[in-house]
Length: 196
Image (cartoon, rainbow, N blue to C red; front, side, top):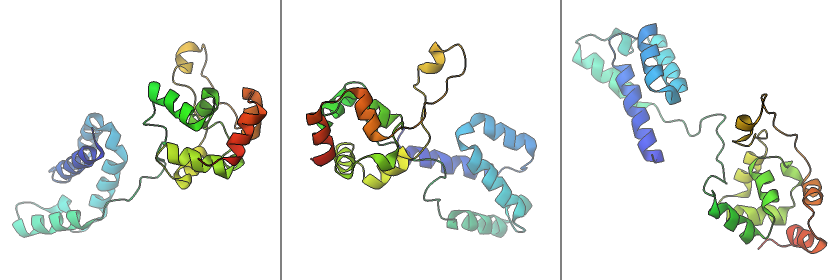
């Protein structure tokens, strides 16, 4: 589903919730069970409806009141960005595309995996390599730094293979990652100097 489709569905869900005759606990629970991905938006809308003294909650058959509520609803600007959600610059690179990305960057896949899983301390990555990574992932250095600053992730299959709850590894310096990966001095020079 595309972003436009997701936004359209969200708008329809919020509109349907807003025009419900009752905004009690059972109505909210019904919507949350059907659309758990919109939980924050639904709770926010419920709060706005309850706080509004002239909101949709008080409308009955009065056409002007319904129009006024609709105008207020559509006049609310969309949120530019949801807190906590950071664009994943590696999302487009799965399977063979991931291998091709490592090849394009002239690095070992283990290094690219560590970057994807945010194991590297973002500020320790040399600027030329960060620029090369941004270009290759069709991103910006700002987006990459924001993504890499997030907590480390656990590999998707780790919980399946583990007896207990797996823990995300601690972040490490970029140079330590290179040493651990056994890169040659030529590979290291390429990473630290070349931005193309």
